[in-house]
Length: 298
Image (spheres, rainbow, N blue to C red):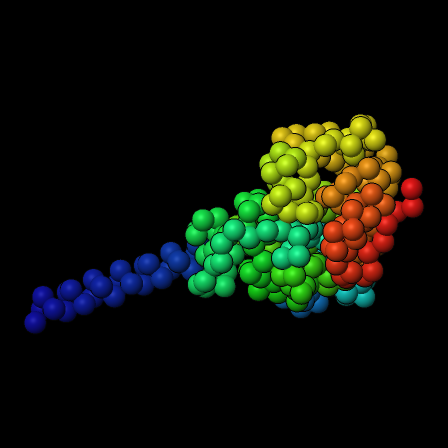
């Protein structure tokens, strides 16, 4: 009996000692959290999409309170919400230039040829595991809508030719589609990047053309027109966006397939006259989504 009392007393003393040490550590090591973080977080959309470059809305709120980012860097919030946060913090909203996701492919079912019929789970990732997905162009969009399902903001829809179309008004540049696409066709760009290569194939001329009417055939006409902005790499034009101010619609005029286009605000697609004439002659006029496509006057 005496042994039990001694053991119980020892445990009690040890428990009290450890509790005291924890209380002391909590007092000495406590990190004060600015209450403004909770207020700023409550003004955010709670999307936790990562479009702002932070892990989530809480991390972004901490950065705003710390003064390392501006409230306007949250592209999901309405401008009014950014202004409200800025007013609360006593800083300028400084809303950044809008960025959107863009697809480097125009090969819908009306343009791209399929060499096999895929049956199975309607997923680009699943189809890509079976002979690359069944399209002759192994670089192109498979059209099963993984990107549209991954988008939390309903900003991507498949058109009638099973090609994804990004709604720039709804797009928040969160990057979910970039991570989801197994062909790595999406990238995030400021809307001021008007010149765009809507193709990712590295096949050469004849093979590319036989695989997809919208494919770049590597002729280099665009690079010859604006060599200061465009260069060729593995049969595909590469745009130097550090010289974006020098880009003009002239670069798309001589493109025979329409693989390089000029994008107007709101997603309006302008094709070179040569490409538009060629497609219309083949009975393949460009898809008028999201707004009517036009040819740039030569």
